[in-house]
Amino acid sequence: MSILKVARLGHPVLRALAEAIPLEEIESAVVQKLIDDMVETMREYEGVGLAAPQVHESKQIIVVEMQAHPRHLNITGIPLTILINPTITSLSLEIEEDWEGCLSINDLRGKVPRSRRVSVKGYDRKGKEVKLDIENFFARVVQHEVDHLLGKIFLDRMSDFSTLTHLSEYNRYWNVG
Ligand code: NI
Figure 1 (cartoon, rainbow, N blue to C red):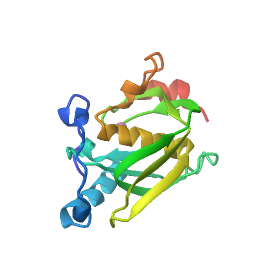
Figure 2 (tube, rainbow, N blue to C red):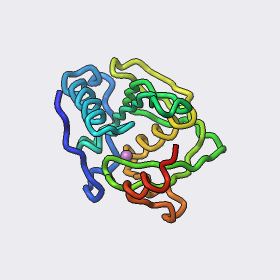
Figure 3 (cartoon, rainbow, N blue to C red):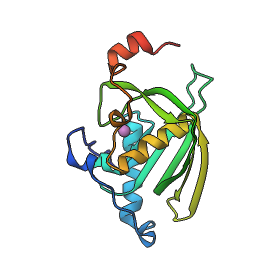
């Protein structure tokens, strides 16, 4: 496995529409290695999600994972989830605003409105169809990562930039608890 270079804001790959993976290619060595490398890269940089365009591959793959935090027992972890060709099939009208960051926009945090619940369908790394009904932080991360496949970043989804904050100031003033 390899740690991949992360594309940063301004790289055109982050603004392109990612290509679907043909189903017969999901189990190919190339796609499997890309998935493994994406998981390793996400863990190395302590992200909770990563989309293939963020590692310069304009393909419809996202990986999501969050360890349960020992000091934040109210936040449940997210099991390692790999979605190929994901589509959000329903979005709740209930919107919540919460903080987001992005490995491609390091050092910034901002509050982003997102649907509290979503349904998403796609394929797992074995090519098996999956459908997830998810809520709260898991739903937020999936919306953020699916946006990357559409060439969107979290800044595009902010209602305004009044909460845009450098990471050190976020940790100092806003990351309470
Ligand atoms: Ni991101």
